[in-house]
Every structure is written in C-alpha cells, then in structure tokens.
Image 1 (tube, rainbow, N blue to C red):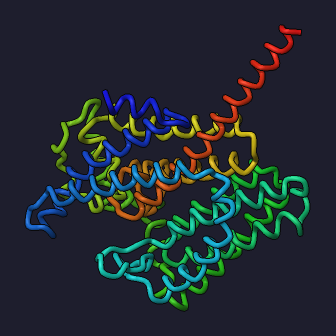
Image 2 (cartoon, rainbow, N blue to C red; image 1 turned 180 degrees about the horizontal axis):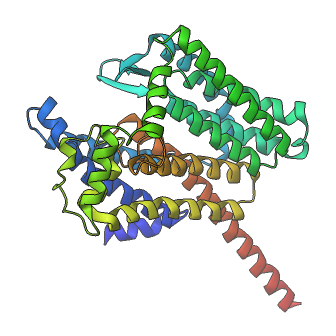
Image 3 (cartoon, one colour; image 1 turned 90 degrees about the horizontal axis):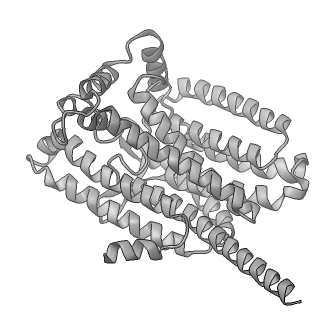
Length: 392
C-alpha cells in the first residue's frame, strides 16, 4: 500500500515512471540469468555476485532518476556549456590514455573503486542538452547560417569525431540524434544535408587515418563487422543469437533456463535481448520492445504539451537517443544491421552506463513534471476566468 501511495504521489508522467520500473525489474532478472557463465569463469560460480551488483546499480539508478527529476529542467540548460567543455578533454584523454577493454579504448578508470566510466556516456548527455539549448535560444534566427547553424555544427562535429576512433556506433547514434533534433528544431533542411555531407567527409577522413594509426582507430573491426553482415551469416555471435530467439518460441523456455547463454558472447550486454526471447519467448521480447515504443509515444506527448522549446527539444532528444539505441540493439540480435556493440538501455548489465541512462530518464521526467504543473495552472486560470464571467 505504501509503495502504491508513493507512486501515486509522484508528479510527472506516471507511465514513464512505470516504464523505468519495469525495465529495471527485467534488467535484474535477465542479467542474473545471462551472466551465469561469466560468474563461473570469473567468480568461482558465485552467480549471486552479478545479481547483487546489477540490483545495486538499478536501485542507484532509480535514486539518480528521482534526484534529476527534482531539478527544474531549465537548470540543465545553464549547466550544458560547462558540461560540454568538460567533455572534450575527457574524450581526448580517452583516445590516448584510456583503459583498453576488448581491444577498445572507450573507458577511463575511476581510482579506488576498481570501476571504469565510458566517457562517451558523458558526451552524449552533454551534447544533447547543449544542442537543445542552442536550438531553443536561436528559434527567431533558426534559418540563419552564422547565428544558428554554426554554433550547433561545431560542437556536434567535434564531439562525434572524438568518439568515432574507439566507438563508431555510439558516434553514429549521437550524430543521428542531433540531426533529428535539428529537424524538430526547424533548422533549414539544406543545412541538415550540409551537416550530413560534413559527417561523411569526416568519417572518410577518420577511416583514412585509421589505416595509418590502427592502434588508435578500429578500422579493422569496422571492416570485419560490415563484411560479416554482408557476406556471411553474421558470425558465430549472430548464429547463437538467432538460435536463442528461435528456441524461445512464443512463451520461452523459462527464467534461468537459457541454453545459448553458455555460448553467446556478451549475452549479458550486447545480446541480452536474445536471452530474454529464449527465456520469455516472443511475448517477452515484444513486451520489452513495447516498453521502448511506449516511452517514445509518451515523450512525443510531452513535446506537444511543453510550453517552452528547450524542454520539448531536450525531452525528445534524450528519448530518441535511448529508443534508437534500443532498436539498434534488437536489430543486431535478429541480424538486421551489423554488430554495433550498443547495449539495451537500462536492461543490459552495466554500472555507470545505467546511471547515465537514468539521468536521461530523470531529465525527461523533470520536463514532464513541469509540463503537468503548467497544464494544471492553465486549467486553474481557465476555471477562474469562467467563474468571473459567470459572476459578472
């Protein structure tokens, strides 16, 4: 009863609160099962270790969501320039001195706690908030090249190009998110096309540099993944992933009963959707897909009701980044796109990545909270006007 009462007392879009809670529950259950082979390999069979770890991060994520939801969303506009300025040197440091994991240098180590942080997570958040800030501030001159387009294109190009060497998928996802935000923010279509051309030229330049500095830029990995997608059955990972999905049928083999988790690499991260489908069936997979679609629909509703441009663009930008990432992760599992390395937001095993996802969700909820309050105040004002008219 207390839990239900606390949920009812939350402000903002309660559907999004419910989505966050359901994804968190699914995350704990799926990771506990999918990380079983990892537990035997690294933890002497202590499968509860990853269960507790994931549960702790999910609970911390819920707390972070609540904290971010309590800030007025306009505060994030004030912090955006500082956060972006902090991000650029972090990305440069990561390229040259970052911690290398699975032949990729995407992380920096956090001293004393034996954990790493993926700097691109900070960059995504900083850039999306900054782009929303500029787009909202320059609405009256949004068609002007110097006043509106250049202040947006420079941080987008710089941030994405610094992410590309170690993480092409994240850079491409962030670039696409910014393009969609610019379209929603009424930037001239010819400028959007120009940014796409600049992005392609930048990508080709990075590819050329990668042939000279393969230790810094992972062009061989990119070429291998594209080749596997176009000319083979996708590689061993995709074969096991499709086998897992097919084995699940409609209702699945049951929680914890996955067989392919013992053979599928990164079953707890990149391919956790395949394990969900195997254990919970097509119905379970569609349920997860439905939650992300529901999140997108609810955020579109926030955009249509938000009285300020910054809140609308911010909410849809953060939402698109999460939902597109989820769709790409699922598309990889069923071999619709090449392997990307992108995880399933708030479901895959993670630490700081979960926290940054929850920050994004908390900011979206902050926008929805003040949209709700603005709507309520508008209704109150309308009622007062009606009463005054009747009185006269």
